[in-house]
Structure formats: C-alpha cells, structure tokens
Length: 309
Image (spheres, rainbow, N blue to C red):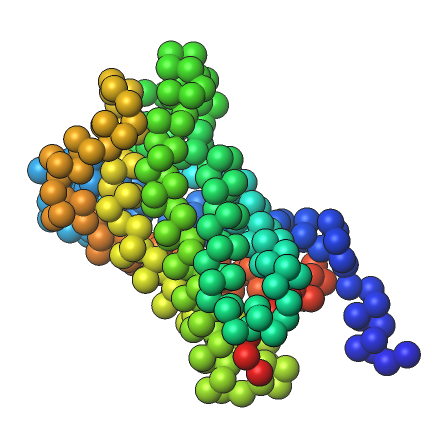
C-alpha cells in the first residue's frame, strides 16, 4: 500500500472529522478575535461615543490609554475569546457539515455548477447556530467595553446581566442585529474566500504542487479579500449591535433597531468602518490560514471541495 493510500485510510471520517473541523475553527476564531481586542475596543468606542472619539483610529487608541490606562484596551478579552471560540466551532465545523450535506443532496455535478449557492446556504445555516452560542458573550463584551465600571470581567459581567435582566432580554436583545450582521458577513466571507481561493489557485497552479508556505500565502490573500468585503456588508448591523447592547432599553428589539437606525442615518451606520475593515480583513486572513494549518496538523485534510477542475 502506498503512503498516500495509508494516509487516506487513516483519515478521520464522520463525527471525528467534523470534531476536528470544529476545533480548528474554534482555535482560529478565538485566537484572532482575542488578539484584536484592542482594535475592537477602540472601534466600539467610536461607534458608541462618536462625539468623543472623532479623530480616527490612532487618536482613539491614545484617548483610551490616556483616560483609562493601557489595560483598558484589553477590556472584554475574556468574553471575546470565549464567545468566538464557541462561534468558530459552530461556524467552521457547521459550514463543512452543511456543505457536505448539500453536495450529497444535489449531487457532485450540480453542486459544482451551483457552488456559489451552496456556499451561501451552508454559511448562513452554520452562522445561525453559531450566533446562538455567541450572543450572550458578545452582549457581555459590549457592556464591559461601553460601561467599564459595570463589572470586573467575564464571569461578573455575565452574572450581573443574567441576574438583573434575565437570559432572554439581557443576552438576546442583540440576537436580531447579530443575525443581521453575522449571517450576511459569514455568507460573504465564505463565498468570497472560496471564489478568491479558486481564482488564485487557478492562476498559480494546482495546489498539490504548491509548497506549504505558498498555500498559506494563498489562504492569507483569499481571506484578506473575503474579510474586507464582509466588513463593508455587515457594518450597519455591527453599529446597531453596539448601540443596542450599550443599555438595557425598553420596547421590542425591532422597535429599538428601527429607532436607532433612524437616529443614526446612513452616515452614522457606517461609523468606524475604516477600523473595522482593518480589523476584519486582518483577522479573516489569519483565520483561514490558521484554520487550514490546524486542519492539516489534525489530519483533517479530506474536506469536500466543489471547485471547477
């Protein structure tokens, strides 16, 4: 038996395979979002207090450090890492699962011809379940960033919201805007990545002939393009999410969203877009690169592909 055949016979399948996809997704999302916590702190401040933080990203960093100390830039690190660790597991693991399910349903040839639709649907379904896991921790993060004296960290902030506002209102008031932000973001992220990857591989040669470093570069480039596109698409909902989680508020979620959108206007909804493009473009590039490398390390290299030959 050849080395290739031995590797193929030992490759994980079924639940073991998707558990590896989920772990790789959890690590890549938790690490990248956690590392960019300082950028997210400044971005959130720009969105929530535009009259104070109105001089750009670099000035925003200086303002936060001057007013609250350098440690303030790590506000919300705990819920950021934990939330996106869980979200990454459901997002990447779910995307692989739903993509394979769709291919099995329509057949390989139809899947290749309709691969964009499969990417979009698989990403959208996966992100819905990922957001159920993410929402409580994202609500906690935003409350900690917008109200630094609210709690000392993840556990105390989470507990206080649960005690004072209850699980549904406290943690899921922002579920609507999270879906409005994350589902279009993830759909754009995966479809643009897949298409960019396909185009780049088509230009530089078969991936089987590329070195490990070259493949990492392809993943970084494809991820950067995907992240920048996804950031623009999801920016309005990201702003609304920051606003609605700042305080407990009254009225239904949709009423509050409509009111906030009216108050902000188009320009207000795109506050903080520049920093967010930098943040999302960077983290998405590294997410796909880390995800691919971890999958390889775990032996989970047999994910299904539907790119044209």
